[in-house]
Amino acid sequence: MTQRTQIRIESIVQGVGFRPFVYREAAACGLTGWVLNDSQGVLIEAEGPPEQLADFLDRLQQRLPPLATITSLQQQEVSPKGDQDFTIRHSQEQSDSSAQIAPDTYVCDDCLQELFDPGDARYRYPFINCTNCGPRYSIVTGIPYDRPKTTMAVFPMCPNCQAEYDDPTSRRFHAQPNACPRCGPQLQLLNADGTPHISDTPMETAISLLQQGGILAIKGLGGYHLAVDAGNDAALAELRRRKARDEKPFALMSRNLEQVRQYAKTSPEEERLLSSTERPIVLLEQQDQHGISPLVAPRNRYFGVMLPYTPLHYLLLEQHFTALVMTSGNLTDEPIAYQNDDACERLKGIADFYLSHNREIFTRTDDSIVRVMAGQPMLLRRSRGYVPRSIALPAAQDNILALGAELKNTFCMTRQDRAFMSHHVGDLKNLDVYRSFEQGIMHLQEILSWQPHCIAHDLHPDYFSSLYALEQEVLPTVAVQHHHAHLVSCMAEHGETEPCLGMIFDGIGYGVDGHIWGGEFLLGDSQKCERLGHFAYLPMPGGDAATRQPWRMAISLLTQVYGDELPGLPLLAAIPSQDLKLLRQMIDKGINSPLTSSCG
Image 1: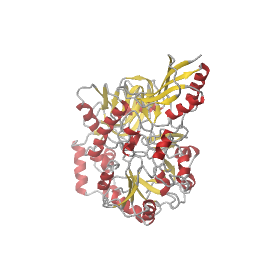
Image 2 (image 1 turned 180 degrees about the horizontal axis):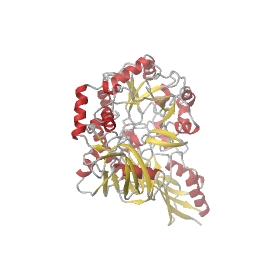
Image 3 (image 1 turned 30 degrees about the vertical axis):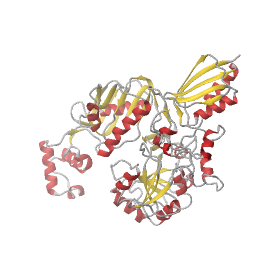
Image 4 (image 1 turned 90 degrees about the vertical axis):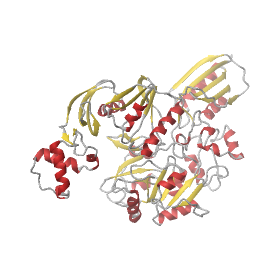
């Protein structure tokens, strides 16, 4: 007896080798039919004896490819059609999309072995990848996920790559970014002015420049990094000067865990995170003695460390460095550079050379940052490696676009019982960041084939995220108090749905009473909250200026305690007397000094 089953699978099943996986499992079970990508995920029709179909369904759920996940599997019996074999069909586009694109992921062990194998066709090729690794979200231009809808569309495959792509037994069967030195992206070394640096061996030349103390702009998966030798004090001092970054720590990259252990203390959980497919930056306590320059993280007992996640990184770190500084390719507070011409313009005066290539990045993504607290990972910045993977919600939601706050912005889109958080966007006061915010919303809407029914924004009426929401006049908007959002975010992280007591010790957020909140004791849930208490209000002289010049708040606090007779502290001696007098007048008369309960 022959039966035919139609199977609909949703979640991360595009760009992860899922169709080739289905093909192989169907062949192993002796089934006929087909599999295709569409805008909702993967659709399968399989035909054969009932016991073989049951085995096939079990295999689909138990033997997933490394990067695949399934959140929904639905099946229904359909009429047999008598197919002669099992095939992979061309993708279908639909107006409604529930497909999920895989995040960018680190280069897998199989590709690494080929990368350093002199007998392999991709020996030392910095763009090696397969269905289990490589760029995904950063190169996707649309759905369904196929090569024509990625930035790899401009690279036609050579006969050898095409043969791999068409071979069901190959690890590169239907691997959309598949390429080799003959047909794929090429590495290029550029001078500081963006002109080509003449070299037959750009990688080896780049390594030599780093050894000589040069500052190298390197194009990665989601944008450019600025790299220097982490043991070179002079190079680091110059990078800080050029980047206008006085003290903020730089991230480090080392080839393997053995090298990391030379300068940082690691726990099993921290090593697991460092080695994970996401390859985030992990905050690690410094060793007492190490060879890393003190200019990497001044007056800080932690290093931010990551392991390589592209073939290019592995080639750079193959022999010569315990660690490289890998900091974002931008000036302080600007978005990371990710387009070649833009990088040469924006990093002019910072980078001595550019190690670039001609595979375009469609969506910029910063490195993710994780810290282990009480043995559990805490995501401080969720971006490359995690985005656009969805987050499960406890109940189905309307289509809501939640815009986030103004600083360190991310936005979120909800669909049914899933939330799709954006990559790290940045501080919206910067025009380039705001444009990236607008572009990011449009792109995520496009790849999800999604339209909002409602927009949620911060209660502060002058935040750029709030202004964006209020400009969308055809949609209803909901203003959410900043610290209520913090409370509910923490509840969501821990799966709490009942009302909770939240102690929020934060910077500044617009309060429902018109004052600036920050040190709050709230009782609430996702629907409402009650302010049970707060830190005493203090004048915030200069408003936003006090967030950039915290000495203003120090004067406000000292005035609150000591009145007119301030103690003779070194801080006060360092402030010009006229500035101090003006600030005291602002506090006394309430001039441009909103009240705040902020914790700073």
